[in-house]
Amino acid sequence: MNLRKCYIENFGKLHEFTYEFQKGLNIINEANSWGKSTFATFIKAMFYGFDTSNKRAISENERKKYYPWQGGKFGGNLEFEINGKIYEIERFFGTKDKDDIFKLYDKTTNSESSDFSENIGEEIFKIDRQAYERSTYIPGQAISVEINDSLSAKLSNIVENENDINTSEDAINNIISVMKEYKKTGNKGRINEIEAIINSKRRELEYSQKNEEIIEARKKRIEEYKLEIKKYEEQKVRNQKKINEISEQENQKLKRELEIANEKLEAQKKIEKLQEENHKHMRFEVIISILIIIMGIILGILISKYLYSFCGAGVLLLIREITKFNKIKKRNNKRYEQISNTKVEITEEKITESKEELLKQNELIDRNISNLINQKSYDENEMNRLINTEESAEEIENEIENLEQDLEEMNHKYDILDKTQKYLLQAKQQFSSHYLQGMTQGFKKYLNLISKEKLETNIDIKLNVKVQEYGEKKDIEYLSTGYKDLIGICIRLALVEALFESEKPFIILDDPFVNLDKEKIEKAKQIVKELSTEYQVIYFACHECRALL
Image (cartoon, rainbow, N blue to C red; front, top):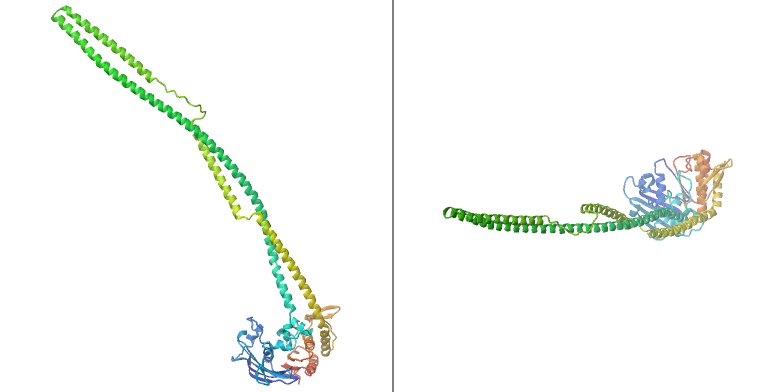
């Protein structure tokens, strides 16, 4: 294929810029800061657009880096020829991917074409953006090549269209990503989490088994508390029965004493009544006796001395009444003394303890019962807490069993993924080794054309180059900048030769020989001239010594 011409409306510092390409060699010799890298990036952007980068650094975000300095529409068009047809790519870019506009025109009909999509670069070159940047686009810096699956597929000649680029690297990365879900550094990942949960559950099981022992011990103590409480309550009932009996006896005694007191009171009232009646009778009798004596004295004086005898009769009557009164009084006093001396005799049941002792015993029993109830309540609460908050040992054992089954399944899947990854890597290495021999031959061919020095080099399947000196393979980082660039240019040229056997692409050389010495630059320029006989070459340089004039 060949580029025909381009127009840049605005791209970086380039504004309303037009360029017509020639077949073969195109030399653009301009001073630094003219915009050579900007021009090269524009060509790349026409075929591949911009990388979907969200990085803030300008150096890592081409959309930001090449946004028009002077403003205006961001983009332009590029005309090219392929398979006998001429097309024009028109792309304009926004600040975001969704704002980009792509159109393709068939220049024969000047109408829009659907022969290629906005992924036109991958569809034409059969390689992705990164592979393009590592092959036909050779910059002045970072010339080394890092293989990717797109390059690997293209080199192995298995690509017919972009859908055939099944990236084994992505597959391996996806497998590694899934494996990391199972196992991560720092004892993380699902497997480690399950193992940690199992260990935690085993501790819970041990704790639960101990709790069950504690629960059983508390149940036993609670039953012992109940028995002790029952014994104390029975003792309290017996004591209360005795207290009631003593109280009943005391009540009976008090009742009998009250009855006797009432009897004494009644007897005393009767005696007092009798005494009062006797006093009345005696007073009457005494009065009569006194009257008889007085009458006898009066009659003896007035009538006859013989009538003094009435005085004697009165005295006798008085003596008889006094004697009688004394006898009755004596008899009543004796009766009163008999009633007063009456004792209460009640048949009592024999009780060894006193009522006060029994009451004190019951107070002590109440305190003991209260303590036992508190202890029982505490044990019941603790037992219920353990029962309600902890899973049973059986439930935890079931959980552990299920978790161990999950862990076994995860480990099995992890082993399968690990083996798959290893087999894929092995297959990828075997697959990549198909193109290694051709790449090695092409690399050494270009290296020998540019440099007279015979370097012993080795290329691995990732296109990493090592230089062998004194029997030891060393990275090219040990070499000078010029030698590193030399090796990078040779590997790129060998890669282009290996990638495109039939349809030849254009090659962009963005001043790649800046670090070569004068002798190697002349050899390199001669190689570029020879390349231009097979490829369209767009060569940028900023110094006459490197310009192909």
